[in-house]
Length: 495
Image 1 (cartoon, rainbow, N blue to C red):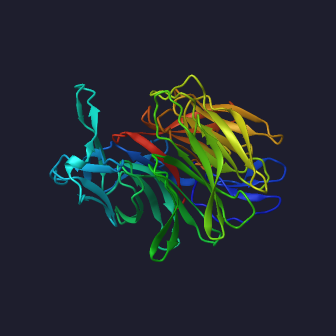
Image 2: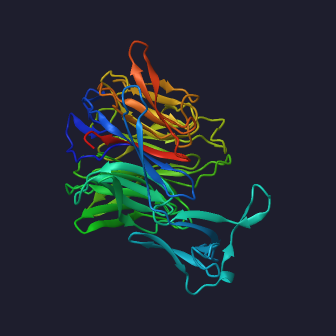
Image 3: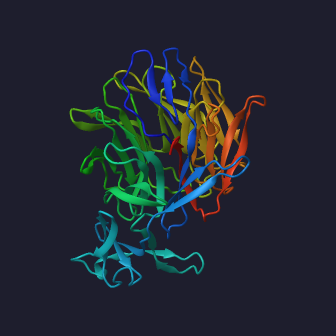
């Protein structure tokens, strides 16, 4: 889910303001979710990867002159490539080995070390090459087995999973980014004509995979100041970062020894205490081989100085990589909406079964009621957002499937849902198919913005009332060697 930095909001009995994608959403006691006018944005921030062997980067998109494409400003991280051979000790501990003496000696086992301004590789004292089982992988071209190699970018990461505007409690605002392989939380600020980054936090969060996968901001301990909640790969790590004058202070609230990937975190008010709750999506690793992939949705409440974990959903046959916390039923508490992936998902991201949009509603005691909203018309969906995309004054949930189209889901006052197609899969698609809602033309209605990676475009889908449909508009072509758009976020007006 994409959303700007949220504010802390008190609970109310009849009408509670809940932060949506680009606007405050007001959920009232009549069961309808309505929105107040949204503000136009200055542009968009797209987080991208070129390849696993190159630093990740983000792109700032701004409106061009009338009739012209949007401008694109690309900001690359510093480079520090390391292609390493993966191995394991008898107890399963991951060990690395260099194949390039310019990176590290090739005759000694290595370990990855997290440092303040980036990562490094260092000799692993006390073990030898013979103590390690070095993994092999079949070469697709030759058919022969060779070293199982993995690419890392030790100073920037090679996957920028999110980039968003951030106003910290201490220090100047900038663009906040999270990366993988290596995992770093950075803030970028413009100094004249160039951008400079500062590492705010880094940590060993996995083994062969070291990824900060998602981040949200909100007051999750009820102290009146926002925390940062980060989820990671591949040891199921969930971290809460407290902002202090001396820097970020991290508390690990969940982890496991198993290879568990947490793709998503959402924050929302699910009860009546001052602290917001947060929700995460731990699951087994991607397989795409027709086997079912299990996963959970977890909830965390701040109770007596600690984050208490409980299970919202535990599904042995499916999982969600995308959830949305929003109050659509007007009871003053958020529900969780989850895009559950299809069973038996294949390598081409198709299945003989659809994925489903499910809802999870909480009563005053925290009891969960589960319901299936309807199918997603696609096997895989990694982006949900909420906003008024047709100008009717009500909120819609919008889902971007990987290859089967973008759909909106409307809930009426009686709790009945309807689904409408925003765009067909032939028009816009991609593995992640990053999507956000934002008012880019200033008409007070949010457009559906999509990173159409298959089409190598960024597109906007705007409501046309006369034809009762969403009309596509190409904002720009993508010509920067794109491998993947991980996320798109609005850049607030004035920046």
